[in-house]
Image 1 (cartoon, rainbow, N blue to C red):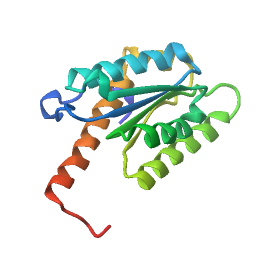
Image 2 (image 1 turned 90 degrees about the vertical axis):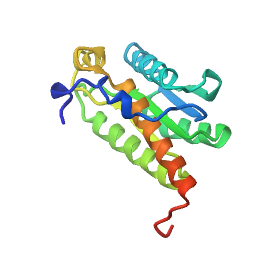
Image 3 (image 1 turned 30 degrees about the vertical axis):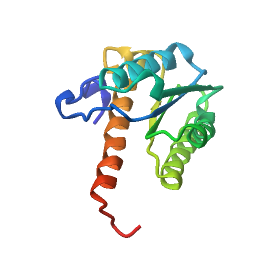
Length: 171
């Protein structure tokens, strides 16, 4: 669903599991920091709101969105998080660089999720212009950082729930 049809900060709070006892990594791109730092604030505040302890949230910054997968891998090796949230913003601009960056980052995070068994959440804005980015970083369409945090909590809970039930599909 297009974010123009949904506020990115809206989620079913009552059905979101508690984040108490979970560890989270957040990797934030410095590029477009006016946008990414607002996404980070929404993400961090949502984790705290749902029970994550400050000591259980590790944050690192990387130069740009393209470096998110490498930063996430380093953080995952050192901190052993329940989930890693990767926050970036690639504004389209005049060339097609955004397509290469976005595809590479998405594929990198999928690969990390599969290789490590730790969910790596794609909290990257891919707007056509700066105004669209602002609209999705606390503006009229909410904050994608909130959405990314809620996704991380749900995925970390899924992992914990399946470990408790010791169910497997053969892997």
